[in-house]
Image 1 (cartoon, rainbow, N blue to C red):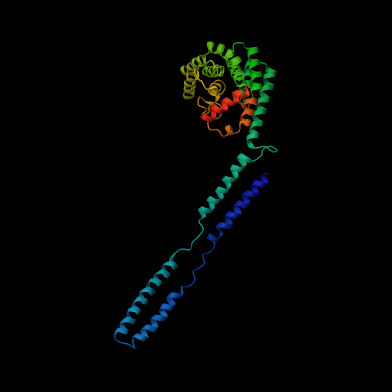
Image 2 (cartoon, rainbow, N blue to C red):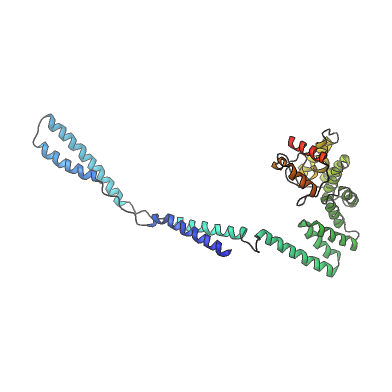
Length: 335
């Protein structure tokens, strides 16, 4: 594959040289303009004729002679200017820029599309490196069997959104250190992301009583929101804001939405508020999850049903009946 990129760069370079090669050649002189010679011959004839005539005819010939001499003077000046002009050359700077452009293009192709593994791209290679690092941390944690080693492993798994490994790691931390609040907090967040808001709320409610960490309060509010317990969700989110949570605007929108949804009459709006708004935004504008308002996927209800039923990426499966899904899609299409 590297050979292919090198060949592509060489082809680009040859094409650039071919395109600009006429500018490097010695400029060809313009062919002689026949007009001045014709005027000179006419001038000689008129001067001879002027000697033989008189009266108005002579005056007409003399005017013609004056006009020709003026035209010949202009032609001579143009020829002198052209002769004094330096020959046009292909600027070296332009050639350097062409070469640098080709080199930059090749570098981008190599950096972002060069396969590191058979059939894989550089992003996949990084994922393989991170997975290898995760396996090394796991082996280290199993050997040491300390809360610190398991916490390092679980934190990396959580960062990589490998929720299964992260849950195992945090469980090990809790077994070894019953007072590790971070492990409890992250385990509660994983429960929420795994589509278990009730269990997540139970864990996070206990954690936030001891340590009102903004991260815990945010996910506790999200869990209550999905459960339809809007008053509790508002309380948790207000605590998030009071303790310095950074996503202030998004959470303020969620609080406003929870207050509005407490009396929502549209079943689709109620379902969205309970199941979707915590991740996709109060008005489906996007948040942790992608924007749903005016999303083209709404025109493919089967695809939406598949994603909701089975989950995708970091989105857990959401159990909805056919009627609930229909109501949800109807509401989203109104946004």
